[in-house]
Image (tube, rainbow, N blue to C red):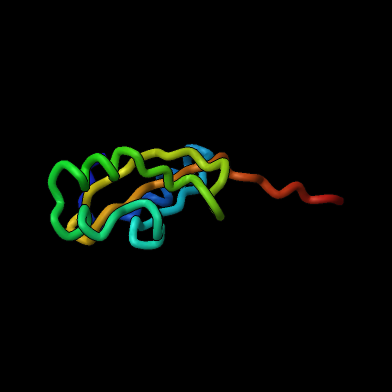
Length: 88
């Protein structure tokens, strides 16, 4: 479907059986050098390409997308949704 920045993709992702999280590069202290974030260019894109946001709280999640946005580096992570089993 056609989407812009205001489109909420969570319902579409949930319909496919996944849960998603959006994470920002600024929350990963060791992922990006200050120089790369300020100057951009080749150093920034090299660090963006090497960034693995599926660590820490997101260990085991799949990286669906790594993006360069106006607000800085961000990534979409997904994992299979866990259905709660009701015990009756």
